[in-house]
Length: 340
Image (tube, rainbow, N blue to C red; front, side, top):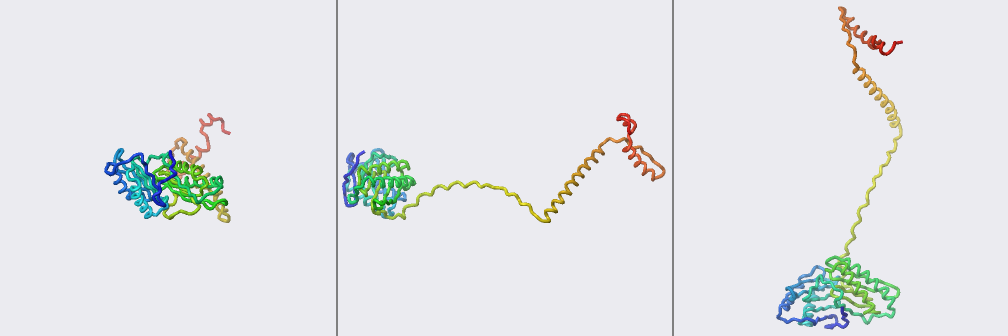
């Protein structure tokens, strides 16, 4: 890793860096691929100011990305990118890799023949700009306030989605004026990668902007900024953070309630009827069982008697039935004992 603390300043609000390790000629394959990449790049806006496009294969592949601040309006973002393309080609006419930060931190443009997306590396160039007009001698107390505040914004940015990882906020104290902060990552980073990049950058504040109450630090993967004045552009374009998932509904407990007895005459009548009906039904059931058992018993055949007098024909069967029920036959008396 190497720190760049002296940037080539094109204008009052533009800073660029030309990587001189590798160059190309204008009519080479890489030169034509780079022309095509930068020509089509402004048409690839993800919707939140992130641009990405590539042309070519192998070592002649031209990759380019551009990222605008999360609170930049679409027209401002597009204009910043178009200006950056022209200015970076003029400032770095034959470098295979170059970066420009335009309008301070409104947007940046980065192109290279190396893979840019998915190639997260915290050892890349860390660029910092410290505000010489905002300083304090109480450095320790400043760091105790600033570092936790920026870490909070780091967590908020890392929690963003795949289209935008951006956070802004402010913190107040009795020792310092209100401090405003910003954190942002390239949205293709995972939440963990974004958090690692921002936390590493924040940890470098005491080393490179020690005592400064204003400054910007970052790399092509993530950036931070803090000032004692507001520098937001248009916070209305920032989408609201995602809502936390709703908790599952609590189980509904159903409790049975005893039915209170009804008072009055109707209640007494119901109790009286139950006292009368239940025993009566029981007696009827028992009587039916007894009659059924009696009819099932094997009876001796009844002597048939006919008389010329019709009344005897009616009376004789009755007498015979009573005799069979009231007296034991001889065999029955002998087998069961004497009848007394």
